[in-house]
Length: 178
Image 1 (cartoon, rainbow, N blue to C red):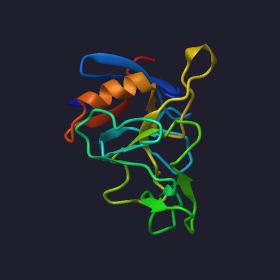
Image 2 (cartoon, rainbow, N blue to C red; image 1 turned 30 degrees about the horizontal axis):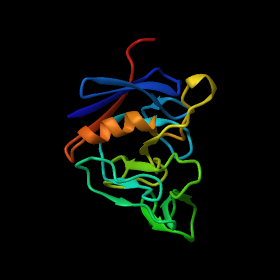
Image 3 (cartoon, rainbow, N blue to C red; image 1 turned 180 degrees about the horizontal axis):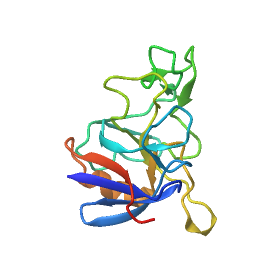
């Protein structure tokens, strides 16, 4: 099955379609971009595998899904230093180069699925830590921009994870509507 994500150029809110359902999703602050670069705030266009599920077992039970997964630990991080050999790879914190903390207070990473973006092979500077994770809801019900990830509300994410398999891929592309 294919997860299909679309969004308008330069906009951080999009639509995720999967299994006959349509969900609003958050995208990077720069919208969907064809040529992703580290720190540009863009969500990369392309077709990506769902690598595995990380979850905060102190906050949620392991969701129903056939994706491989494991609980997050407090020292889990993700290297975002372009020149480091562990760039765009999981690391243990503290780490000697810049790395994102995966154990967060804000609940956005209570569920994380790394996308198969820039990981086979890793290209320095092409972007890191592109995840499918939980969205932050702003006043008025809008979803807050991500740094380049795709994010859903918790209930929507649980529906997608329940149907996702190791063969599920996520296609991200600009919408044809202007």
